Length: 328
Image (cartoon, rainbow, N blue to C red):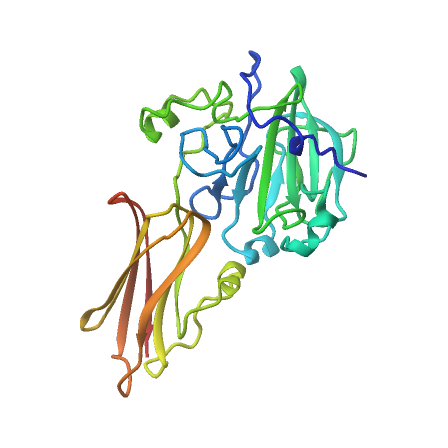
C-alpha cells in the first residue's frame, strides 16, 4: 500500500498549533544520549539555509520532522522498536522498500517514496504523525487499526532517502507541519539555546533535552578506519597488541559546525604521547576524526592506554568521550 507523502510536499513554515491537549510520547526503544540521539529538527526558515527551533544548525533546508538516529548500522540490525507516540488510527503504511543507503543513482527510484517504509497515524483534532525509514518487513500494524501510546509499529531502518539509520517523525495538524519542540514557532534568536529550550511550550509529555552536537562513539585501531566501517559499527579494534604497526584513536560525532575543534589526546604508561587538535572546515551532520602514531621502535609499552576526545565550539566544551585499551 502506498504511504501518503504529504510531509514532503507541505509548506516549509510551521504555523501556530490550534489549542489542543495533544501530547507526544517518546517513540523509540532507546535511551537518548546513550543509544540514540536527535540528529535533526524541523527547519524554521523558508528558502536557503536552515535553523532549528533554538536558532542553531541541527536541521537542513526544508526538513519537516525530528530525526532520531542510531549510532551504528549494527544497532539497526539488532532491532530497535518504533512505537506510537500518541493514540490513533493507522491511515496508511508501506513495508516493501529495501534498507539501503540513498545514492545519486537511486534518486529517480526514490522520487515520491522518500519516506521509505513507514506508518501514518490519524489522531483527534486534525493531528497526524508520520514514521519514516522503517526496516523492511518490520511493520506490525494494519490500515484501519486503532493503536495506543506505545503500540509497536515497526523497527528503525534505512529505507527511503536516508544516509543513516533513523526514525523521521513528522507531526502535522490539518495538513500543516508543526514542530513538537516549538509548536508556536521558532524561539527568539537573541537568547541562549538553553533558555529557549527550557522556555519552549513543547508538545512532548517529557521534552527531550537539546544537544547541539556530540560524540556517538570512539575507539582504537591499527590504522585510520574507513568512515563506512565506523558507521557500520565494525571499526572497533580487535587484536591490538604491543606489536601493532600503529596506534590510532578515532572519534565519531554528529552536529559539527564550521570552526568546531576536536582535540584528540592519547596517554600511555609513560604519560601523554599524542595531542592533536583539528578544526572543522564546514558544517557536517556526521563526521569522524582520527589521530595517532606509527610504531617506530620494537614495540609499544606494555600496559594501559587512555584516549580522550573533546568537542569545542567557540572555546566551550560541547561533549567529551574517553576510550581505554590494554596492550599486551
